[in-house]
Image (cartoon, rainbow, N blue to C red):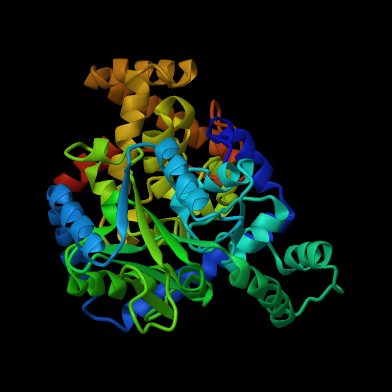
Length: 472
């Protein structure tokens, strides 16, 4: 996937005027948040489980090497192999080699954001191997030459009209606006791909150290067909997805679907444990797990370690007002929204992704809904600080902060300027008591009016409050 994060501002402007995208994003603003709220309300112990999940994830990250080694040993016991890949290029080359060894011409794929992260499809195609996305959303995007804009609902930026037109062009059947008809078209087309595929590639929601198993959670049957019909099954996963036991996995499953789609549980929760056994009706003859680091081990023990708790539920982006206004493509790479604003600078460099941590209102909703309590605003502040220290911040912003710092270091002067500014803005608001064009901040008032300030600064109000005996 081409990196377009440096173009975030241009991407956002385009997104805001895209009528079709804005229509599609309406589903994000209401659908997912409402469903999550109802699912959480039905589970009184939800917050207690979040605390348990946070603590368990912290424990896992402190002993990540141990659990990954146990996982590898148990995969081998089950007849599989584990491949350790430091970089995206290592992962691409490893998967290509495994496909070539299997004599693969066609590869079916379940939904995997890590495969997007390492740009796997383009690499396979460049070497004569045809990858076929089998998740419905991913399949639609592949036909369109498009990329996911959301980590659990990859085609959420599209409307039914878009899908109908895409299927009409590629399936050569009459247009239909019936979702059931369109899904049946996809089933009929993909069924042939499942049968002829030489290799199946899936992601993994969790890796279970205790059993050497991998787990995928889906709402479609494509994941099961992808990993059971071909002779070779390749799992591509990032290293932080390991959990110690099946019981630990169940804790995260209780949080995942509720946080993601508002379901009690996803329709399919499928464990894969090695190769086909004697007497099994189906299953792979070869089982490989490709573990991708790609900068994650550098986060261990540092300020960004908490980001590795992420279980990819997308609750942060589902509730983010910025994502809800511009969608995922504006972020310019694989991971959008608040979680992407933390991960992307780590993976592609702050030089290319400096705008993303600034694409936040810091309302705190992302942290409020995170099932493993990741302090996303704090982690975005880490990157803002990093950006400033490396002089990547625009010069105008640096000048502005410098001026503010000058006055902030001189309390008397700061308070005087605050009183003057307060009275000036109140006067500017006039009888309407709102400011339609804010000096030096016209972009802010282009879409909204600023309420008139009270006429008294915060310090004046605080002192008055204390004099009357009120405490807070």
